[in-house]
Length: 108
Image 1 (cartoon, rainbow, N blue to C red):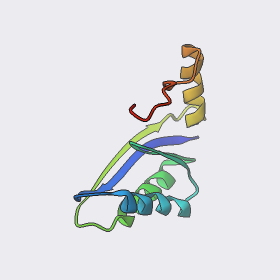
Image 2: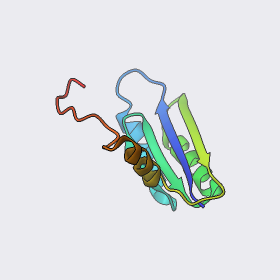
Image 3: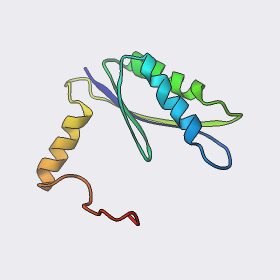
């Protein structure tokens, strides 16, 4: 079984959150999870919900701030072992192209 989640952990502060977000991401290294960080959060994959919850809690606790905002969205498909990459592959097969724009400029 693969449990997939989108985790967003951030201090509620003025200015850059990068250092604290990096601490949250680094905390995931102590767990048997696969993860990939993107601009909106970190996708985590684990073999079971307990491991995923423990990793998410560690990331939350790693942020050193008076106030921390954490959002965890979980996809626990219990009847198959579809991982995150496979989910993207299926969408891309329907699109007939990569699921991203081909813009190369930095203006977005």
